[in-house]
Length: 571
Image (cartoon, rainbow, N blue to C red; front, side, top):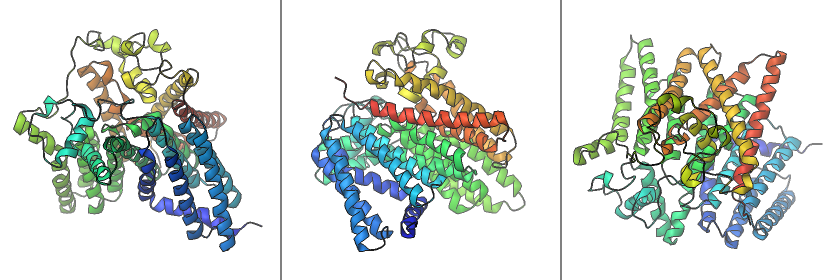
């Protein structure tokens, strides 16, 4: 006979997570923050004691709050069993050389164990599976952050206590508070960026040092913020998928791709502003869809904040705006006989969004004559310059060395050539990043076998996803009306067109990076899920569905494996 009290508990826990996922994610990352004070190369015993105590206390609170046992004795017994398990896990981690690898393995075992437990005492529906995937997604991001220091695989970050880069830009706001730079921001590398992300990082740095944390230790711990952005982005994407009517296996597949995609693991440990931009853009996509379906002031205000703060993070946050503007126009036309309500909302939107989005650029234009769309330009004598190649060669050359070398190619870092094809750059950097940041078999021999498998699976999967996205945006659907399809298609088109134009305007290997169009990843995953959910049940279609579920699952498993292997110590 099943214990109905036990059956209620998973349901209650998952209901809590479903209602307050953002707050719970923030709480979880805050609890992991002290664990991050340890040096990434030498994780201390105190860190594991802290993590073990934290997990045990959280579980004990859940046991008593949700009445997991039938009585006090059972509750205490369950707490004892769990604490013993946590102690064994932490002792295992503390005794092995590859501690981050051990954490990844234990997290995976815990997720599988939780799934078995839930299936035994409750119903393992898609919501619970996705919750476990989200937690496992946070775990692999945490593992990546642990073995990635502030100088590892970063983009234009430089070093703390240095004179340029994102790290120095964070230090400027840390040292000067809200005092705006009184010099031309072009004079120091990366200071031209809008400051929202750097202000948040500086605020956390100030809080940590005020609490007595040693300065460089606090700098290292700042990675918890990008990890939080990446974790929250998973939830935002899931919410979008649910809003358009995805459910069951298609929803699981789309969410899994976002949870375990290498891009979001990589940028979950990056000190620059790309991950916060991704969170702001996808949040704007979500609120734009909500506003279209229910055009009220309570929806347009968050939308304006997301776009404004996105542009205050990085100017390319504007790229969601054209599709949102089209929604505004359509809704106004539909209600042309009673326009004042909507015009008033648009005024509020503009009053919030425009100042937030462009104040930094306007200020620098007025004071220092900095162009509104200023981007630093590298020398055409740089070996990574590809502007001397014809447009057709850059776009259409897919053979030879490019095909055989799966990592982003820089001759300066061991590659046989410098990457020049933007499409290859997109696929390669999505999995392994680029340049000094690139994850390659030369740098990490432990991934010699697994990395190419992950890469080619990703190529097949995302080409299929992209085709599915196009097809689902063209054909009528019971999940999206015509305007909603135009909305999502417009967001995809603007990001991809902007990416290619950027690569042609600044023809350098370093510009060919997925970080300039990260929203295409969840949009492609959405396209695949819509196709799977809309497909019929003919023999060919069933085989297609099974193949794509298997391919998505293998992609996620290989991503988890590769990004666990990277943290391993190789003799």
